[in-house]
Image (cartoon, rainbow, N blue to C red; front, top):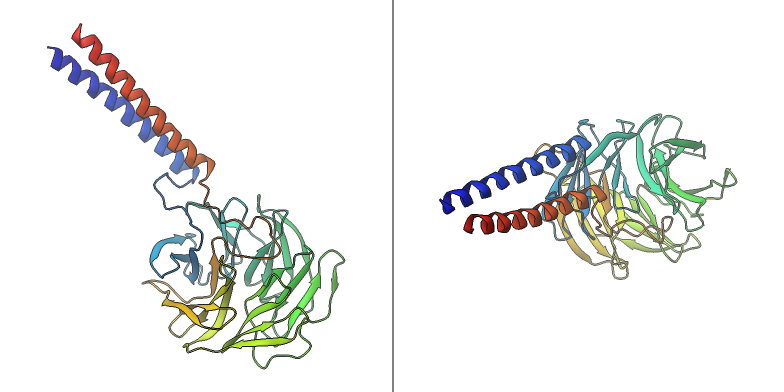
Amino acid sequence: MRDIRWGWTRRGVGVRVLGIMMATLVVVLASGVAPAWALPFNKGDLFASVGNGKVEVYSPTGTLIQTLNNGLNSTFTTGGVFDSAGNFYVTTFSGNVVSKWNNNGGLVNGSFMVGCNSDCESITRDASGNAYVGQADGTGDIRKYNLGTGAFITSFNPTTGPRGTDWVDLAKDQKTIFYTSEGGVIRRFDTAANIQLADFNAIAAGSAMYALRILADGGVLVAHTADVLRYDSNGVLVQTYNFAHNGTLFALNLDPDGTSFWTGDLGGDNMVFRIDIATGAVLTSFATLQAGDNTLAGLTLFGEITQGCEPNCGGNGVPEPATLLLLGSGLIVTIAVKRRARRSASVSRE
């Protein structure tokens, strides 16, 4: 009789616990927050924008970790950025929206930022939590948004040509945006004074420039069709990175180690390459496309170095508060189960 009573008591508690856990899961899934067992982002993870609404997340050695999908089937996904909590945002080019995921890979909103005029291609952020979105076509305006709410704030109309504000990056001064326009110059615009500044490089490069990153010393790295160029803080070309590849070098970003950068081919074999900044040596390379992907059109790194968002550019790998709540609830439930089980066993022995 004691065994029967103990068995039924334990089973009853188990059913109640299962019900609590299932109810919690339903609430979490309904809220759009990733469950506790989703894969959190880790420093150094490479986010490859591969189109058809997707971003493939790879380890630094090329292991596919997970696939993010905005559910919009947007032909291209392009530039990305993280906020201080590690949430991820990506532009969708002709989709004309910016999608958002939390730092566990849970989709928050496929259309988190809206209103792009034509082909929003790149995104960067400042230290105050604002985002700047570059548009390749249409007005070519740079649009400013509140990164926390997705609300549009204002727009800027810098000089463009031959295309729009393709790829943008913000300087440490929190006001100067460096951008490319698919020509041979890196242009600059002062968002505080709302005026055009002189081009960064006085001597134009021979081919189209695409994604760029400002370096800590004020220099710039830029993807340049067949190679990558490095300029010093005065806009003087100091290094050219040449290596074997099969496509247009289009994407570019800095690795968290501060000594290397990543770049990738648009088209061709859609390979990515990690390059040593000082020596130009290829440290890592791998293909990015999976079945159902379109083409590589942007690279973002968790923990990446950007000058405009210092000191916190995201990439700390801290779970979302709601995820911590789910984990905490599981811990509380486990403790309650053990306490109830011990109490029931004690009663059955009396």
